[in-house]
Image (cartoon, rainbow, N blue to C red; front, top):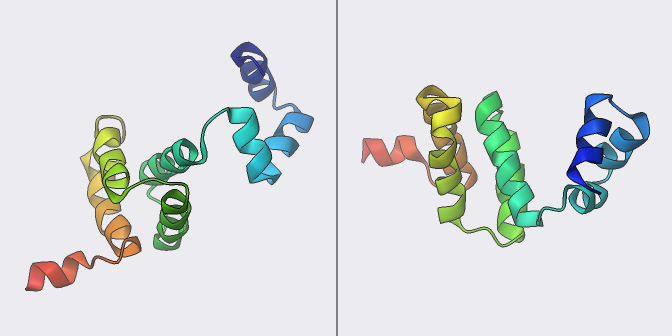
Length: 111
């Protein structure tokens, strides 16, 4: 699907389009033309911007790692979105991402 058509369908909230891309992750990837890894990193960026919950980070980290993203890719995404989201969102996201990766920042700070 070309980008003009996709933008038009998004702008008018075309029901068929939204049903296709909102319900099925495989269809969403196909229509977005992103790789699973790119989509997972984009979702991580959205979580940072929205100040997402810890459980959401756990899910997206599992998704990203299984799609081939590295831990460096995940941390790099946090750093890359800082100019857009602001430092406060990244500071809030860092411990959530760390815990999802199995790293307890609070314990590290106490040591």
